[in-house]
Length: 288
Image (tube, rainbow, N blue to C red):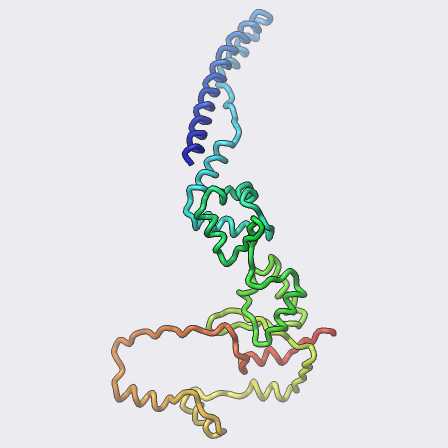
């Protein structure tokens, strides 16, 4: 780092020296040119003198100084920032790169920075083999066919978040598979995460309009106690006991400022309940 800063300072001094020299040369050349023109054509002397007195155009140098400053700022950044830069490069290119290639493409000197090198080797998203680093997705998929085969192998569903880093166009392929009726993309109401389910092309389901209207016309009781009673009438045991819970709350007294309850961790797997069935009534079965 010290060597790079010294080179930058030396380059700046050379630029300033060259700027001074060029300005001095331009100022000396202007009067000589004005005198030469006045000897040939006296009326043009005024115009020549005014032109000679005009300020010289600024000398433009290369952007090498800015580039070196940019490289220096990257290499002085924290290890986490450099690591993020390299992982992003590996994710975008999907190539196996050597430390020298990484240095050329994103200016992170992996070879000279042991902390960055060790962090890359231990990163779960990075694979290191044969002296090359590459991005390691959770699921090794290359195209839409492999994606469909993986989803069909998971009848209980697979989280879309776990698929997003498989390859660059995986999200577009998921939408294409959904449009073709080969998979379902259903949202988890608690976590708002999409879950991909296979749509078995062998299961041809036809639902009568009368049954659809009957299903959609059923109105559930507003009180949870009434729901529990209906479940018991039909021989099912409710998972809750609202009456007992209300009685206990009245007996013990409800605190004036109850503490907010922490949300329970939700399972990424979405259970198919009646809330999803309206969408399932209109089934698009792909051609086999």
